[in-house]
Length: 321
Image (cartoon, rainbow, N blue to C red; front, side, top):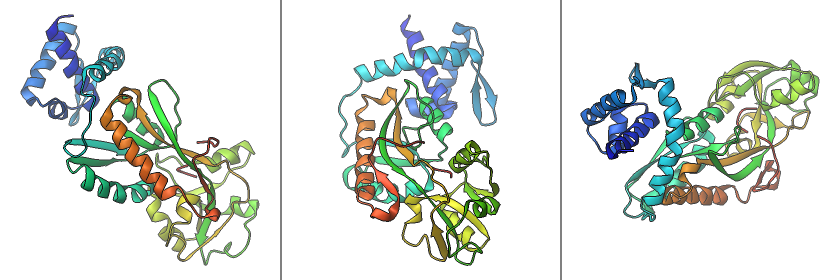
């Protein structure tokens, strides 16, 4: 391969990852016209349009996807092999993009920002919306550096570190007709349910269990943030199965009644996830260690009644119940 073609592949990889000529130029420290000229040369050499306009972004052609699947991993392996092997937090200037739910951001962000301000003032921390499938696709396409959540897709391209696993509690307003006593399975099935669905689908892990028993509940309302759940329950006759991790958070149960579910649901395992291309990236290793350390500090000694369990090896895929 000629040197200029290798350079084009490097630019092509950045465009594929960013889906934007402007963002690719920023990533490569090039001008936008220079990246556009490189795209024109790619189209001539590889005899394919490669990208078509889609709103403000660009959509790769089938040939572009096929080419990227062949060159993406080798290029990142090569970059890691010849790239800088040291990372100095105190002087580094870099962005880290982490996909996480609002609950995880509430737990992690403040202490992580404090640590960055103290140890790595040139680091920028960007939160990215999280869904299980979307976050893992975003890792593969290099839109994010890390994701914190369930691991629904297992393949050679993703790496993970187990963080914790947690169960569920049943919550409702303290004036709900079912409040104050144990909730039966029939009561549960007849109630109107609130579901936190990060994807928008009216189906969660509790529904997986019910469907296996030939049962179904009514999902009357969905939301895509956990932070709105307490107020929604206080001001309605909805009930919700919520992760124990947030059900014992200070202030969560103000005006609410909490009890056990009328059946057992397997606890959910939560992971720190990254792409294999970053295995030897010292900066990613550093930020991973910060995230793991802070979560161990925050979640490592929960009250025994909290219903979640740090660092065990069993459990099934938490986030919408």
